[in-house]
Length: 416
Image 1 (tube, rainbow, N blue to C red):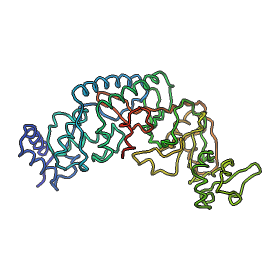
Image 2: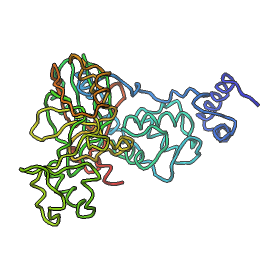
Image 3: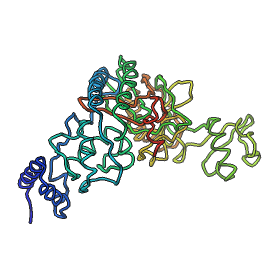
Image 4: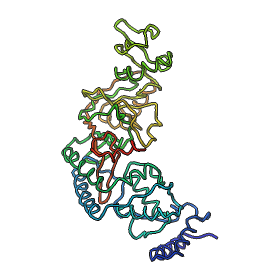
């Protein structure tokens, strides 16, 4: 039997109304609807406006007076949540998802209602229906998680951070946001380290967002303010001494062909040095210059974004594109890898005569290392913001990867 959209919505609305009154029969009916093999794609049949707050997607920059105002409002809301006892812990008994009927879903619904991700009109039931699916996806987006609607380890961990801790996280980050709420430039780039995300901002609006890979816990990306002044197409990669000591020397002890396989040359005062002439069981090599030729396996791949700073860090492309798909993107030695970096570079070079997207792509294909000075330097800010708000009840939280918020409970990845 084929059910049209109007009939389905009418029936579903009746079920929801009955369910809200606590009827056990209604729970059986909605369970049958969810599990029906003929229901097709639930999202196509059911418009689930499950949330109470605004939409998560926005062009509002994290550094903005409006963001400060939204965080101040959120702090007031979270004070009320804490005063009323916070939210319940959701037991991680299984991977809850659309179609599951489990008592834990009742607790999940209450948790999502308190944070504004699920409208109270959705009611309390053990059914993981489309309302809950949309609410979980909204929660995941606000916490920088894949919005698949499935309650897995990371979603449970983020959801079970207590309300008082989240309130404290907002208060800590409000200080950081206020310090950066002034004029930062008509155009600027902001790297948010705990979010592993980049914003390109123009005239007070985000025009590009990029997923990033930032520094490991023991090789942290620094906080800094600078100006992007140069793009290098097909860059040479010069290994810093720290990487030579920590990575290259140990790898050469295991595989004497490592340098040759990765197009890395050793340059000494008198020219290129034969790797076979070095005693890799000592630290002798740490004082030499290791340089990787341009190419697809180069650590920076197609492009490097330069800006003066005392930490010798930069932004760049990477041959390891799969890292951008990971939940935890803290794998670098301090520099910042940029997904879809060519879009960002095209935006940076917009006012540099003769460097449109076509020439940029042609330059990459040439394989020649080419430095390009920007006609006008673009401010860049490396910052640490683990909580912010972009609208009414649209509050974002991230894992405090470097422990700078001062609460162990926020270092979620360490517990997983």
